[in-house]
Image (tube, rainbow, N blue to C red; front, side, top):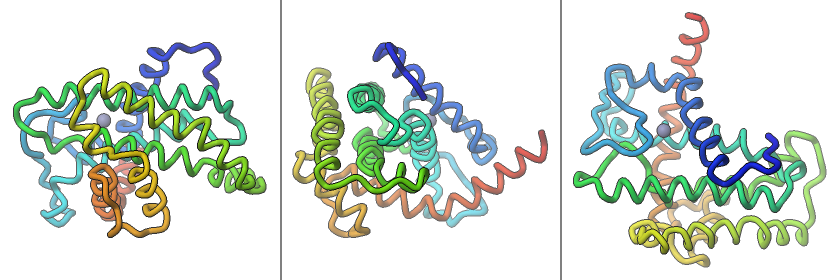
Length: 238
Ligand SMILES: [Zn+2]
């Protein structure tokens, strides 16, 4: 996807549109039939999902998993691969997406009843930056290209990933999104969590964002077959 001179506000709007479109394309509305859901911000109180095809202990995780799925679809579409992306542009896009997540969390924080329908912004940004930091391997897998060397990977981290992380911190501070700052963690802990997540060392994750990501990732494995089932149903009914 090419962005050229697109403004940060426009990038944020594209992100929201792609996220909502992903909910439709992945058949999420069919899964949650009868449950009013997928507001941009959380709705109050407990999840109302009762999905007979899943163990009851997973029910309160379904909506949050579907949110992460929609995020993932949208960010794959927006970010492309490291080989094809302009790094400065990639930094702006990543920061703009993170800004939407922080803004949603800020609005959610004013909600009197803690919600179970949306993951924490820190969790969504953990997935986002984890994906961005993996982009060289995605490019190599898709195009059969050689993996970039250490120096290039470090440069990518310095020019894209770290600035995007600090932009999110800056935005949260400016908006007093204190819960987000607590959940995201300091840079050393946050990036150690990204490495541990990649290595599958989930029991060593320390930040709340990374821990929720791991909890939902595990639940997602059981929820995905349901998504495929409804996707097939949707396709055959068109
Ligand atoms: Zn959503």
